[in-house]
Length: 324
Image (cartoon, rainbow, N blue to C red):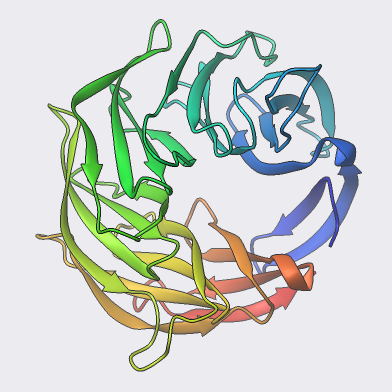
């Protein structure tokens, strides 16, 4: 497959993608991206195990041109751990939080007024037999942060100081999931009362209730991402997103090569299966709903393709419209 960052123009009317530029920064192995559309900035993890002689990956910052979407490199700083797999902006856009999968750590990087990154203002290491930090995100109120730990089958709960970028273990410091779950990515419901975690190795999504006053998650129910009767052998889950309307949750199956679609119970937050949409490619490692929720773009890693789907906002169903 291709390496590096590519820029495409998206036609929201039909989902058509046209290439703008790329590959960029390919030699630094950029994998996960985070965009600040309001300030026109893009941040990328460099999934490396060594940088400048130290056992760490990196995070790169770019400025997005308002006219044509092209990227201008700003700078690169240490992620404070090996193999960074995910990053996100805090809700105010002042800090980048990064999860280091290989190092089993998370770090907080300040964003300067020009969009360049400063060296880490804080970091936290997770104890256990095999800590594997896979995803980090702040809650909707920007007071707490959560790190999914695929190796520990748990979600770390942290307090987050949005002024200073400091993180500390909350009480309780983690939410335990079923042994072998392999929690990978997490997304909050727009109402702030529920969150959903996709379990990579268990082929399942767990609904969590959320207490925003304490920053505490608790597991409510778990549903399979695979159709009834389909074996999970050879399948691993990857991405999860809640629709902007809050009515649907989507999860990707790598192996079954589908997007699992679920309807959300508005009171309990629990999920009911709606169906599965083939991704028209192999290994859907990631997907992204458009801000309006009308389109979904699915990245099929082993087919080197991005497939666009139109989202039926009444039923949650997906209809393919094109690919690149």
